[in-house]
Length: 472
Ligand code: ADP
Ligand code: MG
Ligand code: ZN
Image (tube, rainbow, N blue to C red; front, top):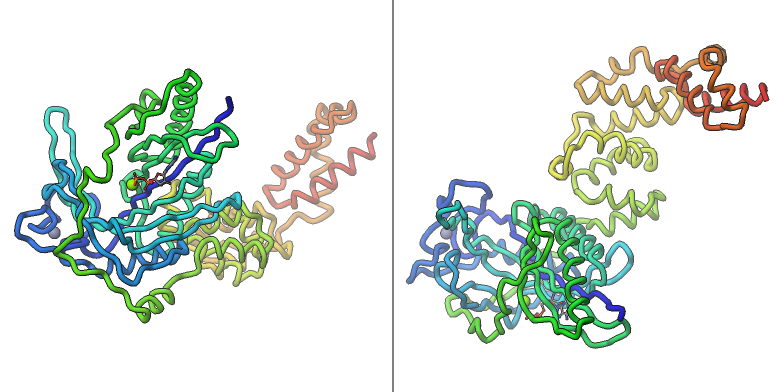
């Protein structure tokens, strides 16, 4: 029997507001444990929460960017459960009426993912296992979260990764979260079920909690698909339960039977008034929305003829996209600029953090001028790369161009270099004449080397090809 995979995602995003959701404590990552806390966020009896309007604003921006309806009135609820990282034994969240509903996000493959809701809630503290003890750090308690819940619209783990990467990009553009999976500012629960191909109704699902990397998410889902289909094929049933992914074993393992909603005894939070948002406020917030990555991608493709993949890489980080656009403006050469960004400049960026905090020691204007010189044939690509390396190292533009600009090997010199290459590599010439056309590359390489990168590679290739044909 062939089974279809169905996934639905519940994603928690920590908002980088100045203060926590119900008190004035700062929101910061990586501080000394239990220093960013007060009686409200550790849950002392008798304290009163005050809703942080900045969190409402940020959550609403997320909702708008994900095409949700923003409810003019929503409410907070108490969700009861016991765990040492939640001292007051209930979490303040939104149950019946969330802030945002009925949104959508389009995947790179064109597939549409429906977003059921986005609600606000408070984060819990963090347990630290030391081996002999379990410690609690309440710095994270009360950090504002949004939970973004999709409909079960994914059919492959790859689609889930695409969705999450787009979500990360959107949050970064909005400036409301850095969405770092490894630091826990983006946390994902994946609901997984399978059903016989062609069936309309959904199978029983399991929920894999707290995936902390995209690679593990893919592995966990693949494992879970195999596990569930094997169970069903043997005549068994899938249990509705919460599971976790064991990275070392490469397996999902049961954690607990899933609580039913009534176990949480949800009721409306009596200490927080309803959250009302006026039309004027909503309009003002909507005007704050920046151009989002999907819009940028479309513009790059339509206006500049940049490929979908390249447009995707260039728009993932707002600072990268903004810089790239300035280089395009300065040079009028978007395709050359895109190639340069993706090959030469990205090579200098060791990881995602470097792209996130992208800043280049070269102004977009100088970058644009360099591209123009290359375009006009005053510099070969190799020379332009050397100039860029000098610029990045702090050399002035004029200094870096000195001795390079206009220093492309002349046709006569190129002819001499080709003759030398043919003499130097008789074996390659023989190979070529015996039909191994690849051997020409050796000769072109020799010319390029001998020219010190001052020969135009296309010209060198043409000249070598011509000389070899004359020998045939
Ligand atoms: P609960 O309220 O019990 O958490 P929901 O119906 O709200 O359950 O769904 C939670 C998440 O599980 C949603 O993201 C939804 O898309 C997903 N989901 C629901 N049913 C399935 C299913 N059969 N297979 C995969 N995902 C599912
Ligand atoms: Mg749920
Ligand atoms: Zn506090």
